Length: 278
Image 1: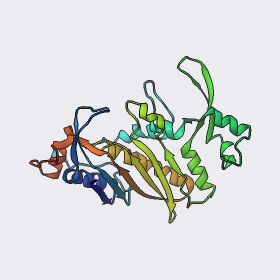
Image 2: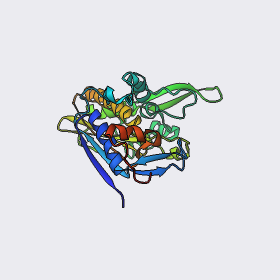
Image 3: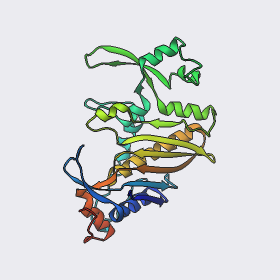
Image 4: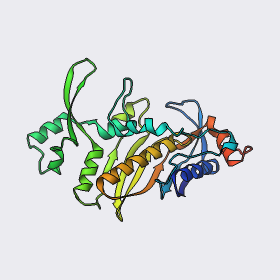
């Protein structure tokens, strides 16, 4: 049977420490069959939900006390580099995607754009025609294809669409505003996105985020990802004009790699601990 875990935390640092200690108790060791670290071992939850009630509380990144002699999992200046990765459409050479590209500059199907312009689907499948006419949401951009030719194409900015929809008061109590990273073709990628979606809800005047990760490195990825997602949430909440709320994150693949086992045990002060399956 699946071993499902729920963790209630105050801030992001508390969430990291609690989750790290819990995985030592409840995780299971598996050998990685395929992916970036094939052949190595990882300690993994079957399923975990982490509720962070006050994710805006500083510091956003976990701080390990100096006497342990272990560096913080994420350096304090890392977020300055991470935010453009999350909040812009920049795609560097050699990158098949970034979270920011999927969220802010996702290519739109030309057939859908053509059908919209020719009013084939209007009133049937298309809602909020105003959004299609908003050049911050549906952007017409020029780029070079792999052959070097200049191409004009339409791109969707999901973040701007989400802000616009909530701000235009289309109804806070709707279940459609999901920032989507995943695509069916990701199954063909050697390293598909770990973050699949960030669901959202405005309740009691606060914006809450519900990210889901298919696979998630607890040691370094978890704190960096959640801190960046929190800053994104703060930005969106300010733009909409609501308060900043909670983060409830879920994953069926939250783990630490074998090179982190001893570090985690040291922090837990359980150096002699035997992990399940180790």
